[in-house]
Image (cartoon, rainbow, N blue to C red):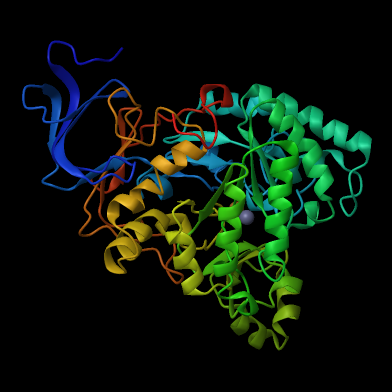
Length: 492
Ligand code: ZN
Ligand code: CU
């Protein structure tokens, strides 16, 4: 299996600072790749290769795993994935926040927030197997782990989205979910915060969670409330995990709204305590602003709102809602109403919470980028280099090895990737070569679609996808099925 034949590998990167993804101290050495695997690490002086690269002491790490994405359709329609591979991302987890492209048959514009990933009925897949097959037939540059979204199930099966699902509707959702898990979906996400799922009682999710348990899947959640009732939401999430006996991942953990600033001192100990009883994970993005659909009735906690897209007013994308409202002679809430359907960035968090959550040893990095927004939140292009360059190097929040662990080794454990996320002989060759001295995000709220600096080479399954500041066009990514993964939340 891809071992170097007669002392010759396909590619050797020499003279690198090897950061293995486990959090262990980096060391100097070479890394050899043959086919789609890592075949050597360390002092490889006696080995030669078809291609040799001198890293000149720069860092080589496992490819970054973006554990929280909305790339469900992006991987199909924009498969070279420049916004992700330019950051060093080699694997994405899709289907987050209750929203997935499959399984859903719909004949109208999907309701928000499903329209964040696809605004036309044609883009959805009636069954999960065809979604995964589309990815197999026309692969992306990155690997994909795909979840089923609870809101997508609800939109497809529940007659009155403003109420609890009936027992026959739960049965219908459960059948679709089981079929999807059998096809290779890795689990179920919820977005209990959002209109299509807000009315779903905890018991409805637990009922679906039992199907997730039966197929050894996991559960991720955009919780019901990330503001005043954040601790109630944590309790609800832990209860779902316990009663359905499934691992849970808290998505984009935050304390939103000025009244809740500082409350991560409360939430992190609650997560710590829960972890002693059950499998719990969490992810975070490195910004004080969030981004999602524009909701006129839910802007109260934000100090500033920027419009990211608007169907009736595309010209306002990228502008502050306050300016638009002033021009219209309306209140911000009234102006927001005129822009719907629309998306927005909300400045609603405190830097201290963002840093405290990011530094928490169990938190993984996930971008939550919205790839179809006209003027997206800069996290879509900047998340990983920002953690490495801004938070690790410039702010000194944690050592580089720890920054890398939060986007590789830890994520691989939480998502059951037993042969990725760590530099190890025999693992898949998902690799990023970057310059620790210069790596930085350049995407900003005013200029959000800019590739990061300092990411020099990105390899997926042995093939370069980003090199010399450009995509190579290669699309070696794989749609990874649940059946190919190990246990969630347990080291290999
Ligand atoms: Zn979310
Ligand atoms: Cu999300």
